[in-house]
Length: 314
Image 1 (cartoon, rainbow, N blue to C red):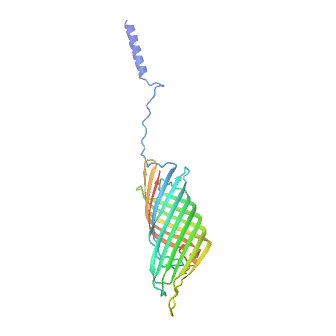
Image 2 (cartoon, rainbow, N blue to C red):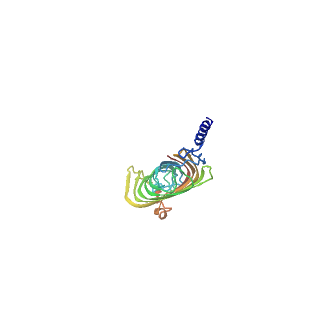
């Protein structure tokens, strides 16, 4: 009897011992995962991005045409620029951008050596740019350090309407330029530590090949006769020129401070504020006719002023 009880007790202890050993088929709990610090959210490999820029166009000198002869100071004006693009997986981005400059001026002057009283001058400038570019290098959704270049095609229209009138004569001049050509630009951002701020710089230039239509009109008032009564009759002379081939260039430079911020995993914003200098319409006529009365506004107009830029990517 005692032997039977001892055998039963040994069997129970053996079963308990085997149950306590880890078997090969038993699932083991995975080791705890190591924790890593999370960095800034990564932007998607492809993303839409858009930008809005407003610059203050401030002509440095008085402008003029055949009619006004450089006696009009153009008003300051806001020159908006909008752009839309899509970043590809390879890192580059096709982009389309449109910019408009519209300004005018009015002056009442007395030309030197003119005894016909005051002369009323007016001048209006309208410039439209459409850029079709490929932007490489920098991720449009994450504007950290590094440089990027852009290359594409610029289509442009430039219109100048001017006139001058006095007691004897009124003159008007209209110039319309239509052209297209290559456009190239480069931009660079230098981050200031981990603050999100950085130094921003950009330069771009375009060379436009096209044609210009110039039309002039001169109207004479009642003829003045110092030895008798004035002639009540009037006469007018109109001269119109056909389209002429012309090459013009545009150049711009920007320098400012940028600020970047990423929200979540897809959205990123950027702001830039600074100053810009640009030259609209430099060409061969500027150097040939510099300082002459027949040089017109499309032969060069310089401007310096502030700009504000905002970008968003998603």
